[in-house]
Amino acid sequence: MKYIVGIDIGTTSTKALLYDLNGKIYAKANIGYKLYQDLPDMAEEDPDAIFNATISAIQEVVAESRIDGQQVIAISWSAQQHSILALDKDYKPLTKSITWADNRAEKYARKYKENGKGMEIYKRTGLPIHPMGPFYKMLWLKNEHPDIFNKAAFWVGIKEYIIWRYTNVLAEETSMAAATGLLNMHTVDWDDEILNSLGIKRSQLPDLVPLTHSIKGIRSEYAKVMGISADVSIVMGATDGALSTIGVGALDTGVLAINIGTSAAVRSFVDKPLIDPKARLYCYPIMEGKYLVGGPINNGGIVFNWAHDALFGAEHETAKLLKQDSYNMLTDIAKTVPAGSAGLLFHPYLGGERAPLWDANARGSFFGLNRNHTRAHMIRAVLEGIVFNLYMTTLALTEVTGKPKEILAAGGFVQSSLGRQIMADVYEHDVTIPDSYESGCLAAMYLAKMSLGMESNLSGITKYIGKEKKYQPNKDNYKAYRKLIPIFIRLSRELSKEYESIADYQREFSKIYKD
Ligand code: ADP
Image 1 (cartoon, rainbow, N blue to C red):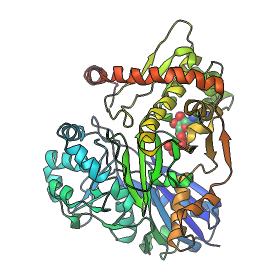
Image 2 (image 1 turned 135 degrees about the horizontal axis):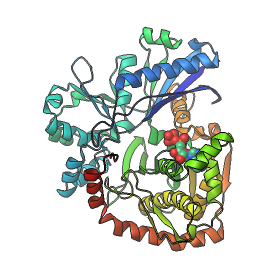
Image 3 (image 1 turned 90 degrees about the horizontal axis):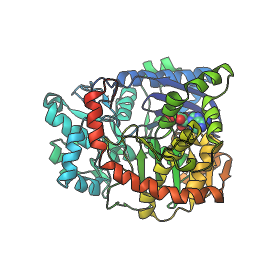
Image 4 (image 1 turned 60 degrees about the vertical axis):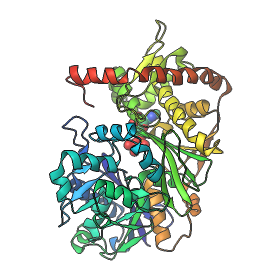
């Protein structure tokens, strides 16, 4: 029997899953690490801690599954997008891994938005005008840390760095390169004008390769630690965004993939570059004839976590005593009030927002409170607010892609029946939940099979996804939402005028507040 490891380098942890060639999971491991946020707007990770986490996660799945490690034929990679590290001429990191959540380049993104250059970058590369983009972070480093910028011999993302550590090969696959803002999406090549404007050369960037590209062999000392063969193939894989879309089987235009985990996203594949005139969506080339269009959303399940901790501390304790899931306990409370939360609205922008507002200063709020509202209304409004915001992003997406034929949803939030029902009701559409909970690792495994010649195209992945469940909209509920959603949208425009002032106030006066 042969095996493949699908591994995902996330923002707070690395997950590894060991599969056999039929897609059966033998073991899972999850190793966490720290996100450094010591300075305002900073969000960095230690690349060596992540490297160690990947080694430990692979070692753990091999040991736990009790298979013969020599039969692991490939390791295939998924990773967070938009990270950037500067390396010196000996490939030693000069920076930590500056993640997508780092907003220190905000000033540069704002300047580029105002002078129109950001729109030009967006049209060439598909990268929205936002400090998450490596292009803007490099601009920030060039201006504010020229010592590092000038010393940098190479620029890579975290996945490229880790693969280099395993193989001594510096390569970057299309989807990750696209998310840097340095790759021209029309030619699918590094954009020389953009590189010139930054003052860097092609030789400072990894070689561009397809997602299914594989590198044969890893350093023997690491193979030994993990208990696998040094002949294993390292398959490039892709971004977590691309892989979680492939991994739920949303392969064609008109099929929407919605993920609500800690953060959230709405995505769809299209067959040619698609530009949103308002730059609310990204568009990245992935494979021949496949471009991923989508909106990344900061405020997903993390907002439910906040409400859980801030408003329902006592229930949390009770759930612990009763050994029940406290999130389920909260959704049961939310079910006791009707759809629309009796006119209580919640804007979920606790962590600023990327799509659909693209405003790092956005803040959350309840609107419409009256004396009859209870905590049950508040928790339901929180859940509904998360989905309304997703729906707003979806409207931007369907403006360019057309009406959805199918909606596939995944992530922790849709594991709850209320979460799924709110989605079907808000979208007034059937929502299908595929049975592939770890869709990113599954799709990474599948790319390895394509790379090894065992599968010929993406559509074969559907046989590994498992059973699907369909949820239908409830007529009474969607009537309530149809009246409420326009208020939610109008309100978000009104409130946006005050986000900067309240965020400035919080920065100045709140000691406990951290951006
Ligand atoms: P990640 O994106 O970090 O992989 P998951 O897909 O596991 O995250 O989703 C985690 C989120 O799922 C949490 O932030 C939490 O708010 C949400 N969640 C967990 N349990 C439930 C539940 N029973 N109902 C609704 N949401 C839930």
